[in-house]
Image (tube, rainbow, N blue to C red):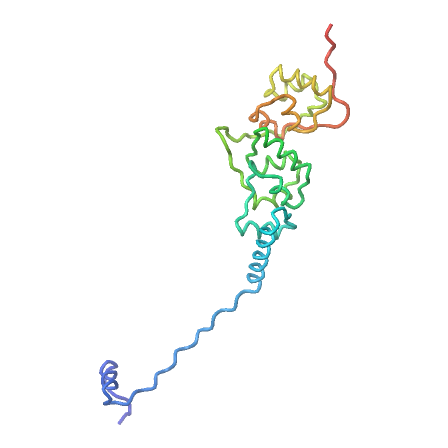
Length: 228
């Protein structure tokens, strides 16, 4: 006769509980081993924590490379392009103080950038440089204006003739073109912020000029005829 009991499991459990049958040995549950953490993920987490500590301790610390930019983005740090301070801009790897100065002067003049392409054209940067910064860049538009679509032609405002200015930059009315020609005889324009300040241009107009103008070096263009 077989030694196994014919009772169903519920009846066997009841008899075992009342002592009428000897208790069977219960198999121990299999031990589930926790998966080992991925070494690369652990290393990235340590680097992010270390970078977070460094940024908190030194608000002016510059990010050194692409990896630190990505880690800063993972930590939630963002640069609001149209409201950023000098310290914010100077954290970006590869940006120069003169470029930061131009960005701040345009910001003070109310000029806003609508996307990475504006930043690339304004600072005359290679796309690869802006791509490094892009995980951190936040382009918020403030006010009622709408982002513009810049053209591809670039007019040298320090050397273009009056006819060229009229033909290629219809955004500038006759009065502004005349003032531009007079001002550049006093001193060539250095950049868009200088142009905006000296011609008292509204921010929306300056935004339209991003990527469409340049500022050549050397003596200014043709002089206006002397008035009698």
